[in-house]
Length: 277
Image (cartoon, rainbow, N blue to C red; front, side, top):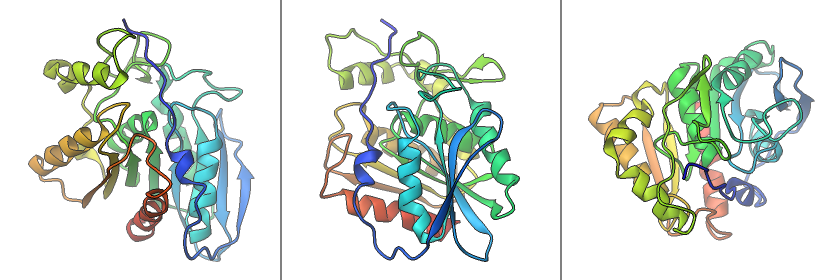
């Protein structure tokens, strides 16, 4: 069975908790560039701004990107809150999403006079981590990465038995779920990840990331094995003698984390970008 089961988004639950030392007022600008669906959050300052491209996971829409803007912009970092499906004018499902869409987001930021385009980061969670890793490994203009409950490989789309991601019209190698819908979702992912030949084809080229990486995983993830995949990425990058810092923070929670862990996670994301961009 190829059909991909949707996941519940996680980062939205993190963003409703206040963070410390919010100092900057900011403007919100609706983006009008190609077919991007995005809002640009611009802190009010005379200095050129670092910027983070932010998007969600299988929930789709722009809400998670906007929530990241509200979370990060008060700290003096601009945010491009981006939707990549389930909004008017773009794909309605997480299927066959062209990576050129995310590259267009970088090109838009380079055109903005208030943005320091030498300091661009990306943050995403769950299914969005796939696009974040692909973007960071394909485009060296991304200088800092944060992923929550990430995957180490690309997966099939939500409704079509093909890769969720394309580049230059070609499918990016991806895994499909194994077993059938009667099995637990975590089991379907684990069985798929046992096929090392397929994993090697779909594994991201993490060594191409051009900056520091923060991974935040759930040790009791009931959706997919984000903790083990994050550990595997750590080992991979150590073996490749990756030259940038790699931080992996894990929590004894499920895929969506918890109210207790949310403030610490939120602060760690903000601090990562403040110190790396």
